[in-house]
Image (cartoon, rainbow, N blue to C red; front, side, top):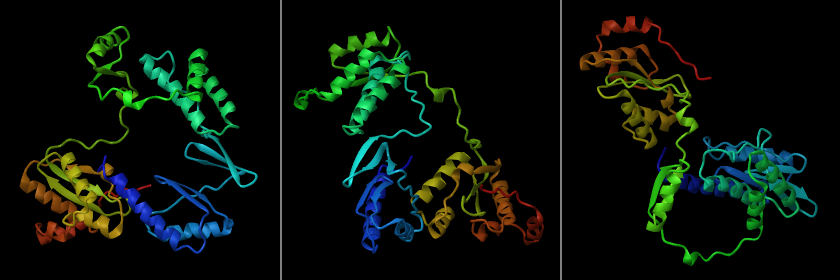
Length: 343
């Protein structure tokens, strides 16, 4: 979740960051190519100065830190490509697969529409051709053949896709039909595929979906915030022991979401947002919890003040705790408060 502008703003800032970092460095890389947050760098000045350059990057902004992977045996993986050094200052490239890669893809016998099964073959073949040079392409295509055969696909279908991608037929985009109305249907062989054929003459495109998904069977492992409608709650900081105590007469989950929006938009009227702005700490909304479900407004206010007083380092202003009689405070400060540590 987040604003649609977030990736654009992040990219604009990274361009600004790169301009400052490269212009202020005494030694500069021969090549600096970035895709989102992965950067490929050619450094001609030796490994000792490379560590100094990394320290220079870390000094630009405290919240932007880099991890670095250097070449091993004259090769370096970058994104999905394995780049290898060649004589005469050239490079070769091929598809990179992690050591944990299992070659498991959607099985050809799976209950999916044929177009979805074909897309598995076409995607892997296209990827092999685009991400490998002429020298590595034959071995890469042979590897894809074996992988697809292991996943139940026919050799004829695989070879047909390879030939289609190696010898593409130019398409006339001007003759493509305009955007069609779409209907989304779960794929049920013998039923919805027939419905699709009926809709085709009506210029309605059918998009098939899968109704059996793993997410329908596996529940989230995150602790869910109880949906109490009234109560007192606590929101911790992920970087220090300080917490924020609040109370609401609405769903606590909704109130915590509103706090997250305030932090996101740097709302200076929010104690959580002020802490985030001043320290750069991240507020851990996933560990927010209900302290006590309380319906009465007066009881909620008193309970909130008690919990604030028990936490001398809370993010709340001390005014929130002034509702308590002064004689209560020495006693409350003796009551131990459970402390959660972030490992």
